[in-house]
Image (cartoon, one colour):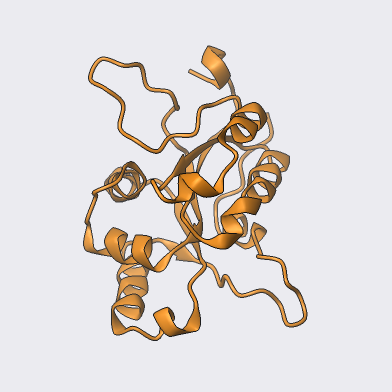
Length: 177
């Protein structure tokens, strides 16, 4: 199944969005992924959902923004992913994911992706005080051991924008359709 029920030949990318201030600009990641030939579906953490304009994301992608589990018997609104980009990834999501605490659709999807062998990359957005917590470093190490590619979420010196495309650079390039 593809965009709004149509069949698509493009590889499918899940973009997982967490509740960080930069998430209001997640459209930059969606646009960049589409320019690289990905068909995109967005899954937000429950708190991350509040940072997105869900109607605008749906208009851009052709898919509903997911944040909660579907009811039994409801159709799957997104195809299976060929890859997953997690950006911005918060302290909370990184730690829960590494620990296997699948209490939200977003984190459960990430935990299942490991078991399914789906290439996954993460672009953290964590302040220095939280990053200093020992659980965070241990969680990043656990994710690396799981094969998750981790990008540096800090902007270049003198640049104020979040480096969205770094997460895409760590994923396999989709083949042109």
